[in-house]
Image (cartoon, rainbow over all chains, first blue to last red):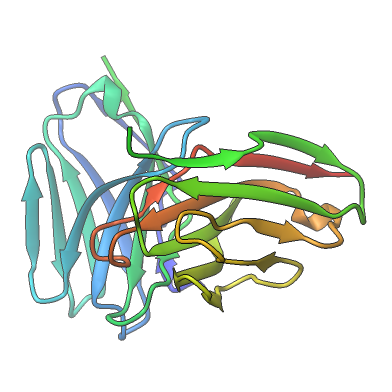
Length: 112
Length: 113
């Protein structure tokens, strides 16, 4: 049973517009969520995270929103740039644990 | 430069021939972890370690072994590789577990024939 779901395998956006990547989770014990970005032939790089005590966290062009009641989080990228084209992984974990549960990823393509 | 270094980057081997993928980090991180990435399955954790001599199973530990004799090194051992272990492997480390995010290595693409 997949505990972290990214239902959109891919997303195409024009440069300058907003990119919205979605993630759903089923495990109520998850209380910390992270987004990673991955370019081909490289390892994932940490992008932004959010604790369950917050509903929003912002870092420059990247904002993560958390809706605990819906068990849903989203990553907003504004404005999108061609360099943002990558695979984005949503991940979740529980306090006191060191395991990260990842979604399958969403490939974002930002066209000029 | 702060980094996680995996070796080799690419490896083709035959079924049953023992192999080790090395992982080293220079950031004095306590937490280290191994993941495998497969098409349609995302990243799945194999093993993790919270400190020297402390290791625990992740979601898919079958067929793998790890050791953590020194803080900086966390090798992944396949005693008898099988074709279903053909995958892209990532080592990662973190200062304090998940909360500050993991730093990942560049990956090892393993093919078992």
